[in-house]
Image 1 (cartoon, rainbow, N blue to C red):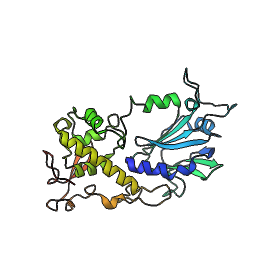
Image 2: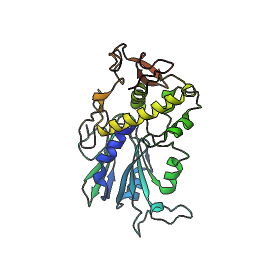
Image 3: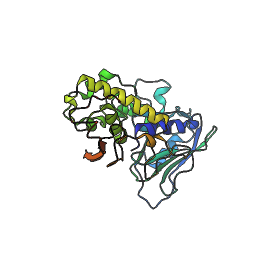
Image 4: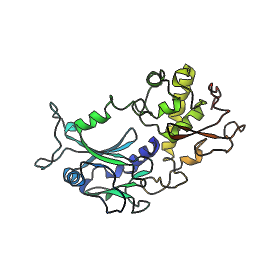
Amino acid sequence: MPELPEVETMCRGVAAAVGCRIRDLRRPKSRLQSIPISPRIDHFRRRVAGRRIAAVRRVGKRVVLELEPARAGSPHPDPLPKGEGTRRAGSGYIVIEPRMTGLVLLANPPDEEHLRLVFSLEGGNAENVLFWDQRGLGVARLLSHAEFLQQFGPNRLGPDALTVAPETLRERLGVSRRAIKVALLDQRALAGVGNLYASEILHRAGIHPAVPCRRLSAADWSRLHEAMRIVLRAAIRHQGSTLRDGTYRIARDDPGGYQRYHRVYQRKDEPCLQCGEARIERIVQAQRSTFFCPVCQRACGSRRRR
């Protein structure tokens, strides 16, 4: 699925939808197998029609459209959780998980064949919100406030990678026997780091991706935290990474720019840009590709500053 910076960029890109009212929802006809949508499309449509989009935000690696509470007299209001009567409690949440090659756009999808959902809008600065998904791995769900907290509250999703404190990062991962690269991808432990950026973060930190978490020193964790903030913030600033397949686009149909700054990802057999002494290697961890420099990221952990 798209890494955190891509999702962050999507949220900013579709921010024009805030304040718009959902006029209709449709699933375009396609010969492709449909993606999971919950509730089923006719119920989904009835529950969101007429609702105003109050906010667009990110939760981990998901795009969330927060809806204002249903208007009085609506035939399908979201149920309020028992004991809650606040405005926020009555909100609904459209949660879109792009996963790998999905995009949340305002217009101009790469093609029509892989267009999965179209939210038609009115009364604001955007006409549509589109969910385009090339591989059909994405998911779209409509959740009540209680359901949202149950699935994405602090007991189900780890602290956000962009705001987690250094000591919290070490506390949550430091005792694990897992390889540090694998642990970084665990959304229950740390929300928002995906495969691409995990490789980039570990290279900048000078840490071998296969080193078990519990073998990392305090200095390693400090460098890892610093590298994570630098990489993710830079990737967001450059609006994510458009890779060789060209499928990732920002919401306005332009490519991202951070791929020009990749140090290791998809650079197998190319010279390391940091040390110039070795060529980038590729291994597979948890069925995902990992790229690293065998000199800058020795198994014991490099102490070179980046």
